[in-house]
Each structure stands twice: as C-alpha cells, then as structure tokens.
Amino acid sequence: MTETVRAPAGQIAPNLILRSPRGRWVLIVTILGSGIAFLDSTVVNVALPRIGHELSAGLADLQWTSTAYTLTLSALLLLGGALGDRYGRRRIFVIGLVWFGVASVLCGLAPSAPVLIAARAVQGIGGALLTPGSLAIIQATFRPEDRGAAIGAWSGFAALFGAIGPLLGGLLVMLASWRLVFFINPPLVAFAVFFAVRHVPETLREDPGGYLDVAGPVLGALGLGGLTYGLIEGAASGWTQPGNLGALIGGVVIFVVFLVVEGVQRDPLMPLGVFRSRAFSGTNAATFAIYGALGGVAFLVVLQLQDVLHYTPLAAGVSLLPLTIILLLFASRAGRLATNLGPRLPMTVGPLIAAVGMALFALVTPGSSYFVTVLPAAIVFGVGMTLTVPALTTTALASVPADHAGIASAINNDVARTAGLIAVAVVPALAGIPSGGNTVHTAALQAGFPMAMYVCAGMCAVGGVVSFLTVPGRGGAPIDQHTPPACAMPPVAAVPATATRKP
Image 1 (cartoon, rainbow, N blue to C red):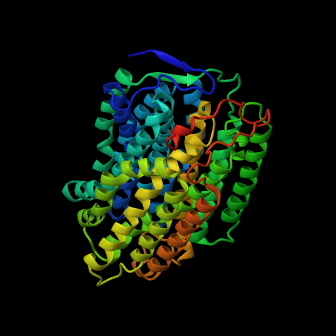
Image 2: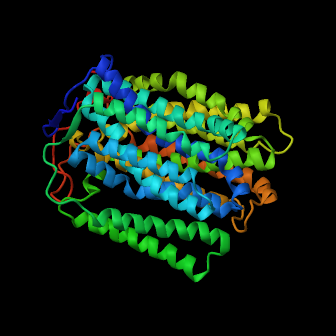
Image 3: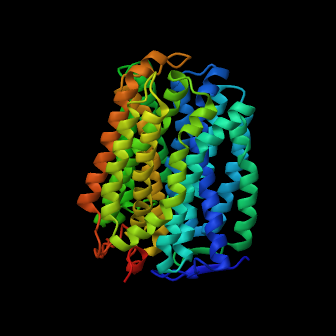
C-alpha cells in the first residue's frame, strides 16, 4: 500500500477505525517502532554495570553511554517531526527504523567505551527520526473518537517495551553478553519496516512551507551538548575547571540564541506560537519534571540493585516485573479514563502517586527485603505512571492544531528526553555521588542513593502540581483558540474535542 494522503489544513485523513484490520496494523507498527526506542533506553540501563566492568568504564563513562543516545535523540527530535510533516510521516519513520537498526549493530560491536558512546550517539539520530513519527501517524490516521484509545494503547505498550527492558537485558547479560542487548534490535526493525510499508498510509502536511529550518537543530544540538558536557564532566572533575564552566555557559548562551532564532524564523522548526496554548505549555512543564524524575530513577535503581545489593542482572530485571504487569494491564484503560474525566485529574494524581513510589525506593538499602522495599516501590511507582502517561501524551497532542501533530509530538518527546538527559547528569551530583575514575564508587552510591530518590520524588510531585494548575479538567477545551502571529505556526482548525473527551 503506497498511497499518499494529504490532510487538508485542520483535518485528519484517512480517519481509520481502531478496530478495523488496517487500524490494528497501523497501531501495531507504531507501537513496535517507538517501542524499540523505549526498549533500548531501559535494556541498556541494566547492562551498564557489566559494560563498566568489561570496558573499564567509570560512572562518567556510563553516564555518557546513556546520555549520548539521549543527547542526539533530544537535539534532533524536532527535526524528525518536521521532516515527517513535510516529506511524509511514514517515509521518515521507516528511514529512522533502518538507521536505528544499523547503529545498533555498531553498538554491539564496540570494542571500547569511547566507541560505544559514539555509536550510541549515532543510534540516537535514528531514534529522533522514528519516535515522533509513531505518535504523529496515530494522530493523523485514526478518527477522532478512536485517538484517545489508540494513544492509550500506544502509551501502554511503548511503556511496556521500556518496562521489560530490565528483565530482557538482565536475561541476555546473564546468558551471553551485554552486546546482545543491541543485537536484538535488527530483527525487530526488519519486522516493523516490512509491515509499515505494507499497511501504514502516508500522510503529510498540505502546506509544508518552502524553507526547512536548519539553524534550529544545529543550535539545539550545540546547546544541549554544551550543557550535558558541563554537567557530567563538572561533577567528575570539578565545576570550576575552565572547560567545564565554559561548556555550561556556552550551552546556556547557545540555547538562548536558539530561542531567538526560532522566534524570528518565517517557518521555524519549533514554532513558539504553540506555547500560547496554556494546556500545551503546562503539559510540557509537567513532562519535564516527571520524566526528569523517571530518568534519574531508571539510571540509579539498577546500579543500586547490582553494585550495592549485589543482585544479578537477571534478578535486577525480574525485581521490576510488577511495574511491567501494571503498565500492560491498565495503560489503555487509563487512556479512556483520561478521555472521560478530562486530563487534569490523572495528570495530578498520577505523578503524586509515582512520587510516593520513588520515595519508597530510598528504602532499598543493603540488607533490605525485596518484598518489603523493592516490590512496594515498584507497584506504587507503576500505578502512578500508568495514570500519568496516557493523559499526558493525549493532552500534548490535542492542545495544538492537528496539522502540527508531528511538531507537537516532537516537542513533547524532546522535553521528556531532555529532562532525563539532565537528570542523569545532575541527580547523582546533587546526591553526592562522584562520577570520576574508572570504576563506580560503590560506597558513595550506597550513601547517596536515598537522597537521589527523594530528589526524584520531589521533581515528580512538582509535575503533578503543575498539571493541576495548567491542564484543563473535564469539559475544559484543550485547544487554545488564540490565533498565533505570522512568525508562529499558521492558524488552522482545532482538533475536535472528541480527541480528549466524549461529547
């Protein structure tokens, strides 16, 4: 199936029914594509201790192994969304899948920590092309009354891929090698590419514009790169070192220039006018706090379980299995709940519950029982995130005109990834966990881990408060009807209210 469907401004084509055979295939392909990216984020986390031992990598190297992927992913997500809107969402999605698969092979063959870090950065480029496309395809192809359920299912299964990552990674590391966590990607990629070409219709903007903003992604990548380098290396070798301090200041300056450039561009990569929507701005502020907390927890919990409590990689993965089960069983229902009740309630209550789960992880210390500490924390954390993610994702997409589904998806994904990127660099430093040297400082990790969990819990709770203050409740219009200026995105018809609530 190769047709291209151009959606007229403000309208959605081809209005697929979720329960139709083709609708199911579209949902399966988009879930699998984004799920591969989510899986790679978490499956690598559980392999980090073994990577550190085999490649003589310290905490800073392990941070870079995680953040190199997130850095390029975050810096280029906006470009990936814009390319999909302009040249075809399915086309860019498929290109991203192939790129991701090739880069995964390079990661699996890496002979040293620097090579692995470089390959992870290349892998992030593929993730930036495919991740925003998956949500944009859903938003642009399903009929309005099915989008909430489709996004809920996408959120649940994409999160499931991420949640089974620790279990799968632990199994692969125990049975063979950490390299297998990268080699599992190419077969999944091949499956997704085949069925995407066969079943997913092509959609793109009716008026893509004449100029593709290149300065935006370049400045964004440089700004994020400077900040990340300064944060990670500052914690490892000292904040006052000229190179580290210069990177931090330079990153901030470049990011300000990025905002200025995007504000004056005729057709900007990130149209600042989308932030005139109170719901969109509030949702992204909440996303930053919640996913920053999630990134810190995901990075540090597996290190604590393996390096301090001496869990095997497989045991560390199995210990978080209840989180997987909760996400699998209830995420789609949570999406429908957000549709019926409005997004404010789940986006307020969910992060607060997740924050309690994060605080409970602080009790995971040497000598503690799994059933008394790890299991309750995983359950409470899972319930909170299951309530939060579908409502957050639906609101982010429904808060802007439908013709910019790719950009909205890219911005929200970008905010989430950037938050995790910064949290992995900052939270260990705030908790007093040093990152210098060629090994992980186990004693310092043990001492600082509880504080790190409390910091993450506080961040997540802030996300719930922001949601309560900014996100519409039941019956509230998710779309900001204000007509943006010419320098922002062009005014188009709003997404029908059925995208987020029943009539």
